[in-house]
Image (cartoon, rainbow, N blue to C red; front, side):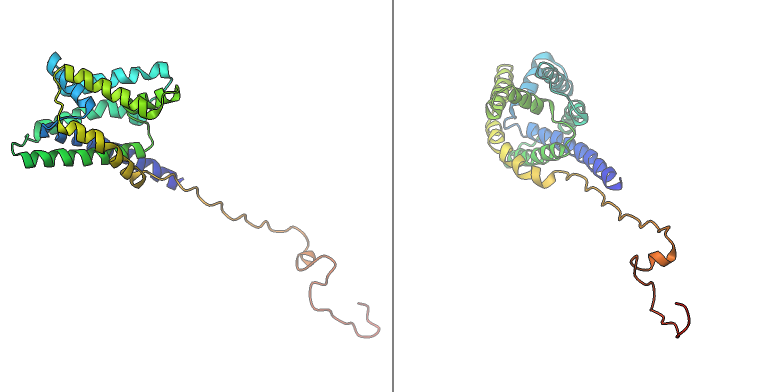
Length: 238
């Protein structure tokens, strides 16, 4: 029982730390101003065209994507709901508190650091096993309906990028770097950060039930003498 409780606690901690890193990495990439990942191109485009705060746009888009799970018969998990609620505010907080650098080398550093931090965060919250993010669930839902995973992911990312670009989202070298690097990085980190399943407690050895047979039967095999054989003197009954 203690092992299972510890595993659940570690899963929850991995989930929250993963979401924190995921949103923080996106915020650093946003501040690099070298191009965003396809979904953040969409978020930025929608925020600019509607005037809504970026955090609310991220939550709104995630909610719409989550609603698309219904016809695909996907079920959100504990981690899915928290992904929807936390990523946007975390990303917006980093953008507000971390100033955008002006020097190109620092901007490149922000881009690369944000990419790696985002990949670590993705691996941690996926490795927690408490439910995929809305976009991941949409991809797996389409895959369950016969669309190959690679094609489903490509269609989703291209659609988000096209709409975001048409709304004025930033597309640049960072967009290409993210598209090429995020898959291999997540593939590298997931097996190293996955929470292993709880090890079942070993079954205790069965207790030996005291025998209720007479002592003369429990000392040895039935039909065998229970102690040294005593030879009676001649004329004495054995």
